[in-house]
Length: 306
Image (cartoon, rainbow, N blue to C red; front, side, top):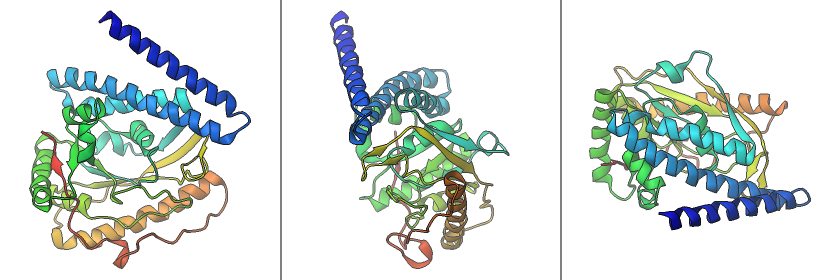
């Protein structure tokens, strides 16, 4: 045990020294600053995952499993602020995050930094969806499994349908909300736009008869862009929109619900980005455009973690 603690101390000390080296080098080279903050982000993920694993075990043992992802999100927010100086400011004047439950929360997926957005806004008694591959990653995957994450398996449509029904029942019985990225993958766009929406989140909301709560984030490519090796400190505004009810809707209404929700979110995203930048921004051409901005496919394949 003593040896493990010693080697752990060596690791974190060496890692901290490496981050500081690139931070100093970043004063004269922007790419070095990108490396420094990226390293700080990765170690923040590791620290939050280790903390989250312990938190999930403790909270599950006292019947508070639904708080695990909220707790680890706040830990990650703190670590990222210390290590990178980047933060997200949440505008939620009606306190939807604290009062609407259960619900399907959705938001745009710009980059991997959206993990920080989740850490900042994530409500209590809410879980995320994730690719099944993440389940195998030490600490992070263990934590997500223990905290009740919904794992997506895009290769198995039969399991997807079963998981959708199971997730819907769990949402209703446990009053457990779910956060999903309807784009399905990161867009990496430089201007405020979104990929076409997949319909999994909307099918799930309709099946569970719970509201959809959109969370809009300003485009932050001026602060983080992996393509341009840009990673700066700063604040990104987010806005929680009014819930969209699904009571009485059926699967036949999902296409229209998806289209209308995307239009509302895109309009708010453009306005929020213009407010943050203090100028009019060009609208990027939507990527992989399908009819009405909706991908004509079945809901996201997923299964509920054991």
